[in-house]
Length: 192
Image (cartoon, rainbow, N blue to C red):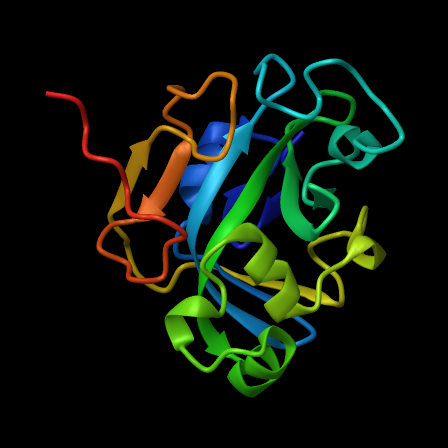
């Protein structure tokens, strides 16, 4: 069953949704920007929170598609994921970085930094800048406080290995907007 939002079928597999999200605008209470970096995760993926089955922490990722799964990383930073696939499957897309476009003053105040490139260049920074916490966990992405806007133009997407994980590190499920200065880390060059 399709779950279309911003021109994306969130019932699709996580790697497809992660690629399609590049260039989509995400706003939380009007603050946000263009998604420039994502990572896909799936229940069959050893790097995924859902790999070992459902727990109270990851239950939202088993929920219906086009909902938020927000979790705390290392007990410090909130991380925002968009749930995909059918309810019960356990797949999602981590929003790793965005290009700030709306509510930049609010982002600067929340983050305590002025440099535009440092506002949302990592998943913890994204949540801090957008004011995302456990309060948005399980919320639908097609209702307030969330707004997702379809790409306004075609974008060039690069794929490569995910970062910051210790399992399935070579799975090419990290997607970035080619040439974006707002990434969390530069895309690793392919091995020769």
